[in-house]
Length: 189
Image 1 (cartoon, rainbow, N blue to C red):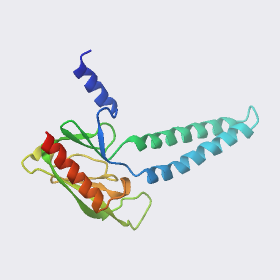
Image 2: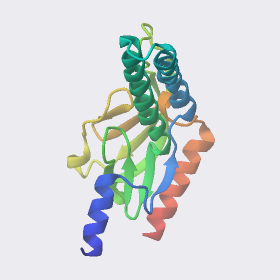
Image 3: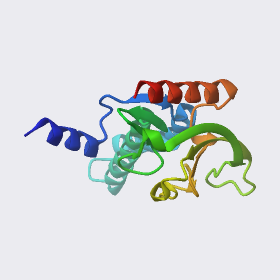
Image 4: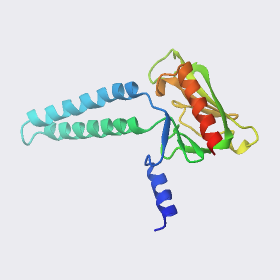
């Protein structure tokens, strides 16, 4: 297997090889989201261990514990997944399942602050949140729109919006740091 084949294999596995994280995910939101399935796992273990040997409750408890553990582990795996990263010549946007959307560096023009609905689950009146917006070059219409998970952001008309609810806290310094790093890698390219 040639090195390029390894690179393709690693990309499909979404391993963080040679990736520089520019914007992290919201660790507090993910850890908070782990509480219900972790509680489910504990309850299931308690049911399985306290039920008599041939009881249906033992089986139900075991299944409940297993499902809770799997969901918790899936959520915890999201802790290592950033929202924006950089890999040689590409800005990576993690706004859907699977591999990130890899945009050629020269197409990403700038990052700036925005505002919009938080898109939080089970909240009727959505609060507003700070968002990160990446502007893409209009000279490349093939990058104007991409399918993304609506809860994480939008990708419309050459603007990539990342919802602040699902990334590290956004402030003026974060935006300046992103633009400074974007300029540094473009100047070094």
